[in-house]
Image (cartoon, rainbow over all chains, first blue to last red; front, side, top):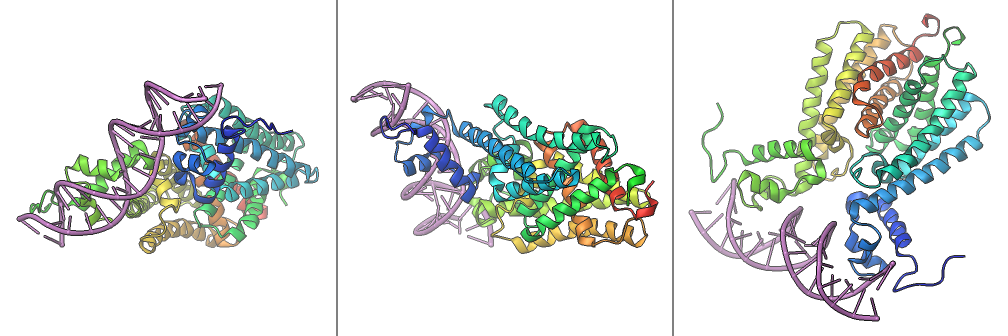
Length: 203
Length: 203
DNA sequence: ACCTGAACACCGTTCAAGT
DNA sequence: ACCTGAACACCGTTCAAGT
């Protein structure tokens, strides 16, 4: 059902730009992304992208938004494939997150480091919020089920999130071996949950 | 005792470049650093820096090395000013780290994201190792003192380190309010230590 | 040894003009 | 509406040549 009506040179230049750009970013990092080269690869004049993205940062913004959408799907998927057990849910989501964050390190950088915040930040913010809300929901469920002590929801979620972000960052920075990321993530989650558990149920 | 013997135009071009570059990076980020502009600001031809740094990445490498040296001093200072109590030591170092990481976010990025690993990585690696060893030493002391369960030293240190890195990253990314970074860091450290404490001493 | 000046091959961005 | 081609002001890097 893709539209066949290619206009001047390309059916959908906007999508083509985004696809190619994401590919370049994944392979070579953000710094390697050149608008001119992108246009060349697609076979369009170097000024053509201007119609769809007012400048380089606007394109990066769009990439970040798409990234959050994909991350959300990845996280939802991980929850669906886990059992209903609280610890299982948290671990599954944690593993899915660090995998995404390290497989697509450059994209994740784009999503968080607000080097381009001046632009579509409303839409970007919304896309990001949806992802964070997923993590919050899991933690909230755990609190309500009495799995962890009833502390401030935001603090608990944020610390958990930060730990995952840090594990991914250290892996990207070659301080954690990629093969140890999984075990280390599980260990970190277990330790945190143990620290958060109601006092007398600590085994 | 600064050397007065200015040679062609500048007494010590290398130092001047590094100082000015660190300043620019701190104020405007890595991407804003231009070798030509740097040379212009210092009042030297645009090709002069080549004598001291073979290219832009080599200069960034040197900045990263200097950053690790300063971080090390900051961490050592924080330990000196804390009491001998294990939890105090860890908390003090943690707070010092996240403060450095957020105050000098762009520099920290330079220090970890190995976008320039191709060059002086030997020296850079050594400078980095000295910092990490400091954190390791504190954790090791805690284990030997029986403050935390005798688990794998590397795992414990790495998870702690990752959490700090993540807290800093989320703060830089505006997901944690700068005023909450301190309290949140203390909370994270306490939670982790509680999760790591020997089973029956959990309060 | 250290620096200059010109040159090369790239950028991002802008804008009149074409269809 | 969508794209082109030329132009502008920047880059990083290289290299002969100067002192």
